[in-house]
Length: 355
Image (cartoon, one colour):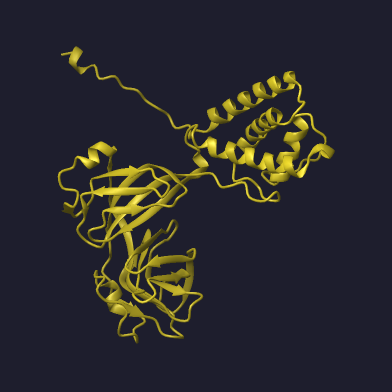
């Protein structure tokens, strides 16, 4: 007997999903006018947006590292952020370097002096900066701070490279194109780096680039931040109180969501580790696939079939009732499965009753 021996290779486009939904509602291909198809795309968009109101969509959780600078009270998050699920303050260790690279660039050392007051610019032909260590080091985070006082923003296309002999370098990680305002940080996690004696950031697009700081670090400790509501935050007597680390935050769920920190950072080298929940991506073109895992496709399709049956004239009421029952059943199954399946333990506190 022959099997496909494949998984997740059957791709369902938006057009296929809509056509199936039309058939389920009793409409033939000839009846699928451009107006109906556009209405189906709109209904599908509403369904995807509504999924975010029904609980946590695990596939839309994203780990995010946020670099802070001195006196930064507000952290602006992407518009697609629905909520902050976890927020930790991270205490990072920056191993002492033995040499700043390139050795023939006199500005290289300023990138590792724990100050944003200076900057370094690479040279054509040596379009990179890095650090060597006396002993091999394992790093888990890479950070860089932008220098762009004239333009206001700078764009970087970096790869992280490592060496074990200061001669042969190899790629460890390729970072996405990053655009930063002058004096702000970008941090990226490094997931599988063993120990090496040297690391460097190499620009792959621009001929030269400038930075204020580079950090190769590992995490010593993470401390959870307590979440405040709006009233608690606004009742704080001194919202500009500085500290070596933030303890609390309020998440303002605006169109452009923001995170208000308290106390505010007293230095330029603090970092937050966030887990944010993001909005599901838009429907897009008919040839696109939905950014939805396979375990949810049937539920979304059934829901769309019911929505179309409500909008299209002449659909039998019995069919509408059947489609409603089917989509609710499949939606319930998908929601029941959307969990990490970790064990939960309940331990009652009976000490007051057993003295």
